[in-house]
Length: 179
Picture 1 (spheres, rainbow, N blue to C red):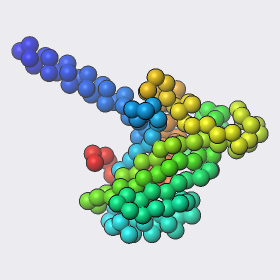
Picture 2 (cartoon, rainbow, N blue to C red):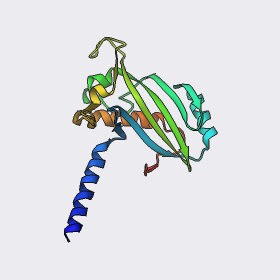
Picture 3 (cartoon, one colour):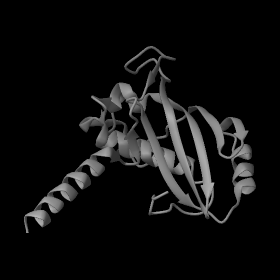
Picture 4 (cartoon, helix red, strand yellow):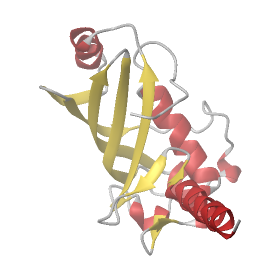
């Protein structure tokens, strides 16, 4: 009986830690860097996805190999198109373009996208910083190796919708992200 309680307590702690580890597809690496990761299903093979990525127009420096890598440079975050009003999101999100490094892994009718080295670049003179100022997303998203409570609310949802739409290359989102 005592063993059952101990196992249940351990499972509860593990589940609790797992829930805190990922917020709206954002996680924090051991190095304290925020990254976004999501798995999608697809009917395309490697070459088909590569073609879509190359012809996308938003992705630069595409490299093909066992994985496909590329960069996103100063993508416009259209918060209105994503269903948010200017007053509902933080100033840094409303006034920043998004850049990141992306890795796409493909297997068994699925592809996993990981966006890291996420940088927000001030795109207006009315924001928090001087136009062109670059800040890693960790500035607002990470404290003490964890996603902040403030970021885990609206900002993480906003950026999750942004990345989810950008990287939906074909097919629909795969619900089980077990890779």
